[in-house]
Length: 346
Image 1 (cartoon, helix red, strand yellow):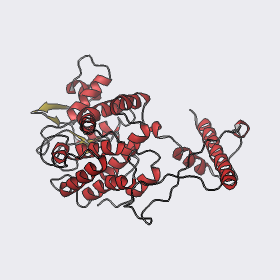
Image 2 (cartoon, rainbow, N blue to C red):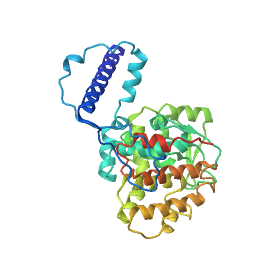
Image 3 (cartoon, one colour):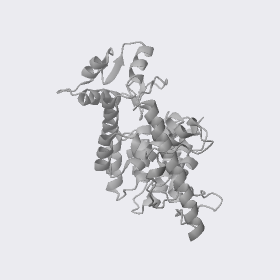
Image 4 (cartoon, helix red, strand yellow):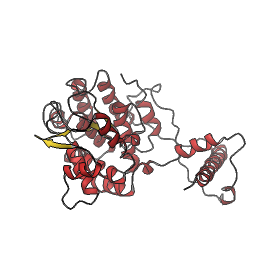
């Protein structure tokens, strides 16, 4: 779409937005207070509760004649573009194929996964705009090799002898149509020099060259597909299985398990998701179980190179606060997400 068409579309969206609020104001004046979303837990004080900002009211009116109108006086082009960006749906952050895959395999929709990823990316990148990190690549000095993409896949090292980065490259080769996908095949496609050695992907290119190659994949559809397939295979699948095994299906619980798995490992030692679950009791009440789970994770989340204190505790607090707010479905939760992620990453 050319620039002129994009601007015209943005203006139309802004006009619809302004008209909607005009109509909403009229409806409120005629009908009195509009019901808003309430938080479920009595433990949250009035001072702590959010001021609701989201109201969903069906609007049925003919506004076709207004769609070609210019923005209101005073609305700059920057205002139009900012509104267009803010008005984008949660689903717009995923390809249709990824949305279908996630819904079929996790039971959660685009809005729920978008919110989960915001909560994951705050302590990872200090940014709620997680979609900027498909092409992320950095050696963060944790002896796990390079850290890559939206879930921090690693190439491996002394602190990570079973890295997930190799599977990511293999999935990329598969997504590009390889009949016999392999890490080597993906590296060849990308013009990267490296090889597998004792389960670790050793990159022989310079750091700057390798990082640049991964950065260039930011908008590659095959890379994004491979990223989500690997994310699912390594962390999401196990997390969903563990939630359902206990009779839990909420987005908050699944997201909490996924965040733990990618941050501390899905299975293995006492600090992994598997280890924490083993110490979280056997309550069939989801809130009781998850309260214990958060308490157990908090004890170790700032140790063993998982997070730099106090980032780990704040990371867990995001999820536990949402539980106490009653935001377990992560739907219509934009204001709540903003509130719980409003902390400083050290």
